[in-house]
Image (cartoon, rainbow, N blue to C red; front, side, top):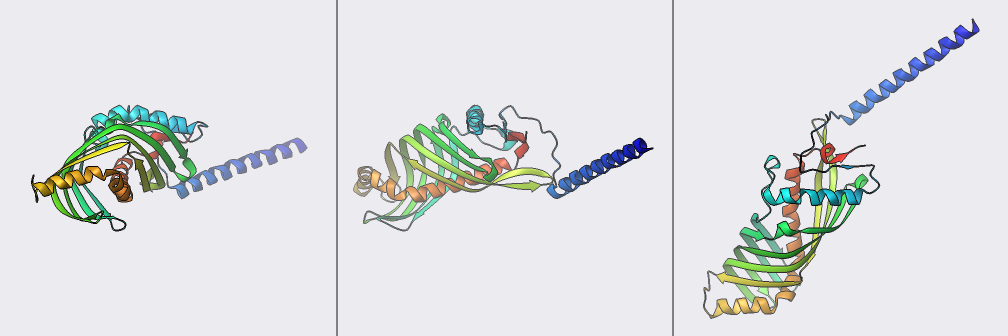
Length: 267
């Protein structure tokens, strides 16, 4: 009789534990609101694990792996080829210092971004913070421009076509993401993207439609190239903000089509 009573108590305890466990699991699923299947892994993705002790190295390998796909473009993510990289428009405004200008660049074609290399990656998954250190040997850019303001006390009002060559480019991209749940599926949204860069060398040439090839147009080209370091240094914050905004929108367009579970496994 005693054995039967003990057995009954143990069975009741086991059933209670199972019920509590199931209830907790159900509550967790309801609270999380997740409904994530086992998504197929695209060939351009090398997924990482949240529990990987070498998560920095894993993401570095992921970015190296996806590079040739980015060069050609990824149609299913609506990602155009980055070689050349075509940017419809960039706006820059700098209202302080010796370079005070408002500039709009349009129909920008950039040759060389596909040759990027990544030297270091730092990842903080709990906060969704990603720091990328990149370098580019050379970037060749051409497009149209419209600029108004003052450059080193030299008044400037000009629009036309431009060409620029940047060499030995070093950049650091700091990406801050947040997790979002849509229809039971987790995604990452980029809430902030900061870019800083340095240039080993640079050259500019403009074809001013206002001044043409006359003395003023030639003088502007000479002036820009003689003072290129000072101008770039003054415009760097505005340029970084403009480039950061463009790539933030670009990445968010990609991440809305790429669930977190595809590129970041939970186990």
